[in-house]
Amino acid sequence: MVIQRIQSLYLLIAVIFMVVFAFFPALSFQMADKTVLYGALETGRAGSMHIDPLLLTLVILTSLLALIDIFLFKNLQRQMTVCFVDIIIGLAMLVAIGIQAFYVGNRDGWTVSWQWYLLLPILSIVFLMMAHKAMSRDKKKLNDAYRLR
Image 1 (cartoon, rainbow, N blue to C red):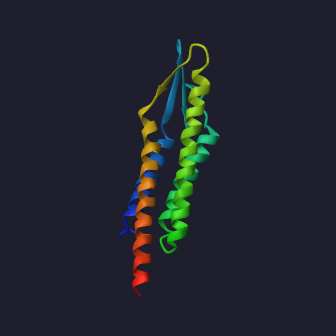
Image 2: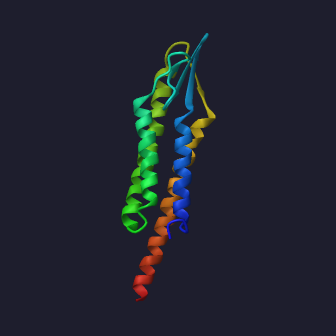
Image 3: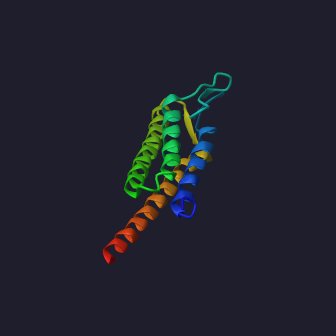
C-alpha cells in the first residue's frame, strides 16, 4: 500500500533532491581573486571549507521529515500535517539562503552567483506540495466513502 500511493513517490523524490543539495554549494561569492562558497557541507574559501550548521540542520530536518512522512500512511491527517510542516521548513531554508545572499552581496565589491543546485530545494518543495495535494485528494475520497456508508 505504501509504494502504490503517488504521494510516497513524491516524498521520496523530495528526499533525494534534498540529499543531493546537501553536497553542493548554493551560492558563490566573488571579490577580485577570492571566491567563497555557501552550502550545507561546503562553506568558505577553497582550502578552509567548513559546514554551515544552520543550512545543514534545515536540510537534514527537511529530508528526514519527508522520509518519516512516507511511513505515516496509516494516519492521513498526521501525514498531511507533517508534510505541511516540512514545506514550511523548506521555505525557511530558502529564506535563510536569500538572507545570506543579501547580507554578503551588499558588502563592497562582492558579487553573488546563484548556482543551479539552488533549484534542488525549490523542486523538493514543489514535490512536497504535490504530495500534500495528493494526500488531500485521498482524504476527500475517504470522506466520500464514509459518507456513502
